[in-house]
Length: 374
Image 1: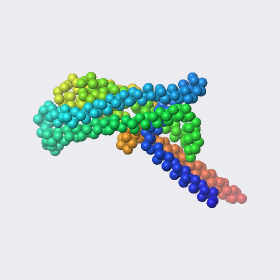
Image 2 (image 1 turned 60 degrees about the vertical axis):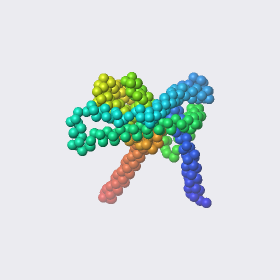
Image 3 (image 1 turned 90 degrees about the vertical axis):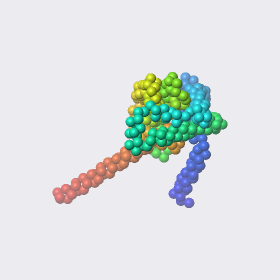
Image 4 (image 1 turned 120 degrees about the vertical axis):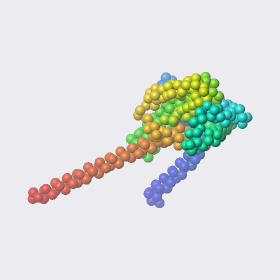
């Protein structure tokens, strides 16, 4: 067999075993993803800890894992369990008829002047009764879907514990051997060193910006919204706060999807005090959090255009679930970087081709002049 055939066979074998390995990891890709994310986020802390422990890598890795458990996993688990309980309560109250969206819509109808109903009829929107029935049905179905998902997530406790165990186990080795693993990956990558460092640096920067920056901002905004709902006596404050935190990851839209309809309902139903307070909290407090925290946490050099973040985040969460809010912007950022490198390479090749062409033409001109002189 010729060396070329052997090389092609080896590339085929390498591709097949790589695909098979990825296929084996797919059931726990979420655990692997979050282990990598936590290792990137806590890497500066781990390096300082390792230097203070005089290079005792196992001890430093164990302490770093425990720090991740107490700082991230335990608080998120408590919030998650509270959200599941809240979702179960909402689901039960919807089934029992305690939450009646038709009644809420009816109270809004009573507060509107007759001219508004007449205008809706002339505009072809339909009668307010039909519109309210459709809106109430949509709200009820949406609430049941959200609550049902909360219950189904809470029932998968065994899968959650297994995934958490795998994540912590992998996280320990990423802390202990992360630098050597990263060096081996860069050496094995079929790209030049400059391209490899550019892509890995962008990967790290986007992960840190997306998780450290956007998640902290989302948590702060969701906490403010949830506390405001609780203080105003709005039911399901924890569930709505978590929803505002998730929706805060979307630029331009954000948590306003939750608090704007609630504030509008309070104002239209005549509860002006609570409605105005909620508008103030949403516009001033929640709105300023993004402007104050995003620049120092995210940074301008890693910030993608808002429309790219919106589309990639929604697309990622649609295809990949909760992990998509990280993977979506990450894929978009790597896409932009890869095409930027390709454009740079093309411009370099074009410049080199132009230089060679000009040099060739100049040489031909010199030869022509030499013949003329003869």
